[in-house]
Image (cartoon, rainbow, N blue to C red):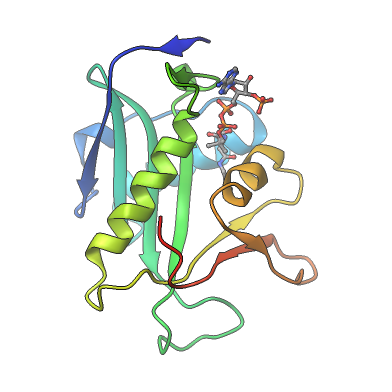
Length: 170
Ligand SMILES: CC(C)(COP(=O)(O)OP(=O)(O)OC[C@H]1O[C@@H](n2cnc3c(N)ncnc32)[C@H](O)[C@@H]1OP(=O)(O)O)[C@@H](O)C(=O)NCCC(=O)NCCS
């Protein structure tokens, strides 16, 4: 798929249950795409307490990112206000698309998500942000690595943790 023209817009969704932009979202049929399709279906059914950024292009949903406050493992206390990226994926018809200036739309989505997380932070500082990525998910790893996330020491039998330190601006 091609270079896409026009602009991307973003909708912040704080009550995602039953939200029309999330209905029927599909990220594609590859192994990792299916996982994200399932996550978004769960969010739509109200089974995850998350905030969502839905990225749209010409009225169609091009990608979805969801996050929630959750401490970076192994900490289990909410002492540090870390943010966990619960879901990120592009719609199947927007996979392998990029903007006229060469920007990947996954980069546009994650950058906007980080800006939104920053804007919502009551302390007016950028919190630490983390994500879990399957070790074989090359595209997921590349996306987070290109946004200041660094790989943490691996935990056996666990997805990889990518962590973006607090204070790093979007
Ligand atoms: C993870 C994800 C969001 C990353 O997005 P992405 O790699 O930027 O986007 P795509 O998967 O559409 O693939 C991008 C392809 O578009 C093409 N492309 C993108 N920008 C381009 C540009 N400026 N010029 C030419 N080609 C370009 C390339 O073919 C590129 O593939 P490459 O990485 O092999 O070079 C996306 O792959 C996805 O939704 N995956 C399924 C769900 C998932 O795994 N989520 C992450 C869980 S941790």
